[in-house]
Amino acid sequence: MSAIPVNLNDILNQAEQNRAQNLRTLAVFDLDSTLFNVSTRTQKILHEFAEAHKLDHLKDVVILPEDWGLKEALFRKGYTVEKDLEMLQAIRDFWAERFFSSEYLHFDVPYPGAVCFVQDLKEAGCEINYLTGRDYVRMGKGSFEVLKKWGFPVTDENLFLKPEKSQDDELFKHDWFKKLNHSDYKKIFFFENEPVNVNAILQSCPEVEVIYLDTTHSRKQTVTAELKRIKHFGRS
Ligand SMILES: [Mg+2]
Image (cartoon, rainbow, N blue to C red; front, side):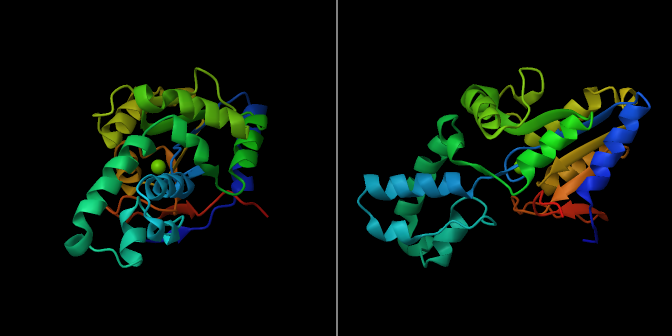
């Protein structure tokens, strides 16, 4: 994948220039692994499993920010499907029940510079939307609370979650962008870490400028297009 460096200040300048001409700018942010490092959520759940089952050796398993879920960290520590299948399945069930819940979203931590960048973007006149594959029923309340807690500009109108958990993330985001009236905006940015979603939007909405968050992803696809990418929102 080719990468084009991104200067986040250029995005702020574009928003300001558009506002000066009475033109609208929209920035759409994914949440998990885009604005928030979720490895701390998984680490907390793993620790609780270890406590509940008195498995102290599990407490040494470190979830890294670039891990996807639990498996990679457990395999790194020497656990295998062959000898630990029963325990791995039990952890997986315990994790899934908590990871996809409002309560545990409070253990997420925003990536460096994320809060400040989104706040500055709003100040520059850009409209902010959050578009997430989290579902409303299990994670709506916590998503709102946690955005607010960290200082992200959030209202009842700019946070979009899936109505049903069974819905496909890619389709949900694709349909959301399709319903958007693109001609209302001079410029639309989409910040996203998941290649499946990135590729879908690049394909269906080429006018949207995608900024790829090169953090972690489901390993289902890769991004082959030449596009802008960042690892966090730190600015110089
Ligand atoms: Mg994500």
